Length: 435
Image 1 (tube, one colour):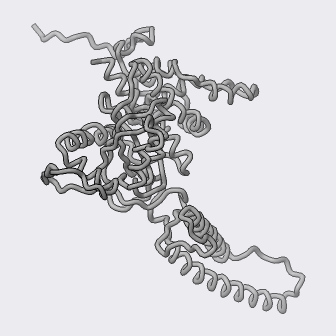
Image 2 (cartoon, helix red, strand yellow):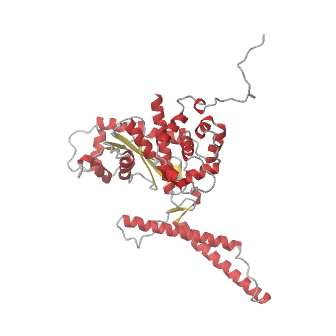
Image 3 (spheres, one colour):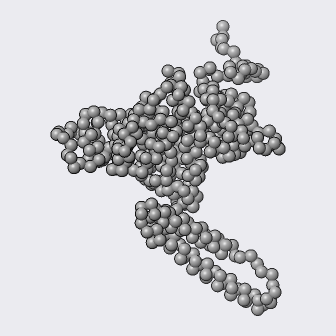
């Protein structure tokens, strides 16, 4: 008697249940994303289509939003890959209810509505906090360098620009002189009323390159003046440093030091609460270091979550006398945030000694913070920081593969980072619900 097998009939007409609600397990992430998006206010997106009544009916914005958000949750960011998933992946097909917009439609939808999508982070966060009746207490602040949609090899320093400006300008003068000599020779041969030819292609390229370099120099010079004004220095005499960089692909990105070396990037910031690793505040900055991010990030947390934390944990990159003074809120004690900020790097395995005696009366804020973190209580609280903020970057970059922005320009990058953070929170809430 031959071995029996379970039925296998690939030619049968129906492989999936007739109802979309039966295609996946009822607790699947796709259904959860669908429910979350159904609670969001999409009026800003719908308003764009209500103004234009001509042409073919567009895809439903709610369906397009669900597909995009789900893509960010499962690490699928490319419009072309999403289009392929809408054919091959059951979860994407369920969310789209059989619709299959092409990659250009998906990319255009994300580009057109990026600012509206940015607001989803705040909506998702507040829904989560209110549903769980969560009160912000301790939060940890950290930043990571996320690569820009540009190569660092497309960047040029101010010193190099000045050098290239002089060299190319000389080449252009030589080409123009040769062209003028050729014109004079042809005038003598054919007469002055001949039809003029177009500018030589080589000259066009050099003039275009010279124009772009000079525009970039103006940008760096304007930036140097703005930085001088902010520092209370004479702006008229400010000149960019020789090493100041300008990227021709994404001028608003910066060369930053990261774990991968020096990269063309933006500095992405998050504030995370310890209980569920929810991101309760997020932002993107062009600054290569974190020391200026404490004040804007605390304001971002308050604006985005609607709550002000009571404690802040951060590494030494955020330490400064001004930041500690802001957190102390001496003029408004009710706004005080208890700080646990490292004042220097601690070597691996190095043990801190508990301080003895009273804090010297002349000790400044940084010295007082050093002593505070040397106490058993302070050291224990600060040690918890790594356990709930650093893993979030690992989940975003490694688990979901978000290591490079899709867009160029600070405003668009900030919007995309907000969507990335919203997707992270959706996943956290989904897993809480499954626990």
